[in-house]
Image 1: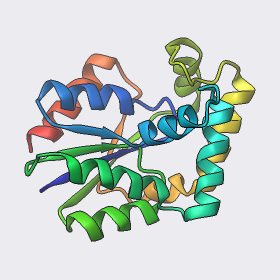
Image 2: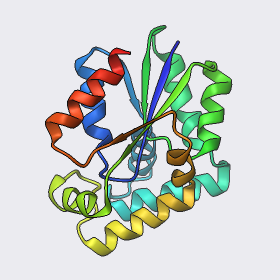
Image 3: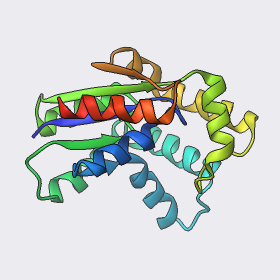
Length: 179
């Protein structure tokens, strides 16, 4: 099985890349869904603050790869032997957990965008757990940096800048997925 993992700072364009992968018929597992599931299981509101707090607490309690371990359970229950997309890698421990369980055919694609562009997207996207102020967005950035996302982005196999039009970004992702 070939694994393609998307990473990037919040609002960089990972969700758009995931939609392109789905259009190609590739199965996608979103790591954030594991966190959302835990938040809902606890009966807590699905807000940026709550999701971030639970994600951090679980990493501290169960190890930095807790969300990879939970994602692996979902992947192992799937019936797929082809290319699989994992959305939301945040640290090297997660990558190692996936490689150990699924094999070495693992490609990390980092999606990057300047802060100003990401902040504008953040204020207009409107997903349930999105930050609603610039201060909250910057707090989320710092939280994710604390999890190790910058090192993952820096060591990615492929880096895709997303600072042009959405159409050009989609075209670039399609080209990469064809390979």
